[in-house]
Length: 290
View 1: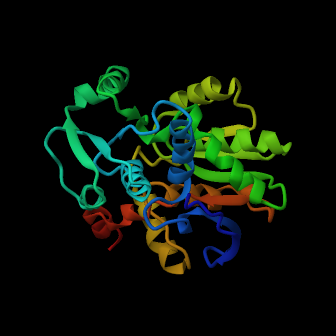
View 2: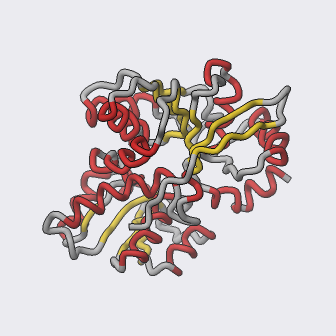
């Protein structure tokens, strides 16, 4: 397996008087399968190898700009597993994400938005075709296990762990790993879309409780991949000052939350960089950021 744990790095950000930040640079794990996307896939991989799914082709689901779809394509390429990506929207959208997936050997199938919304029916359809089904985003209880190795690699217990969140899988994986180590750190899930109830429900389903997870919902800036003039202004000012890359869809929003709230600034807080740099290559954000 190609997972490694990049070290925690310390940075001083020259922004409004300066900020010190400790970053777990999971974006450095792999150019395409970085951060939480790989960690979530590891649990599914381990499960597949221990069950009748060992030799099955993988299938997973996502939008046309899905980091999870791309990560699955890269992961399966490295493991010599055939895979299919079920993409929301039957207009057969083309972009740099999907072209990378096809280069890596993933077969793409496009479905209508209505069919895509009915996930349980869609998942069962592909199970019946004898695929190993990975839920959208790699979410679910099996997606939690990959965070154990990360927490085991840390030498000190942080007060807060801040990260970008879309499904609560990363938050739950971190919380589960912290519990195993006996640490009381608080997980801050900065939501990048408007789905607080869904994420809280997922946490209760997967963990039985969600104490010490805070779902922060005031930094989504309108929803998934959406922005406001305030957020765009922040990105334009801070990106030239950074010595590490951020994307505007996930990590940019989480970094804004970190900088905006003084309680996250103690030296023992850790910012989890979850990758996703391909989002910065979209034409829309190139134009937006000038």
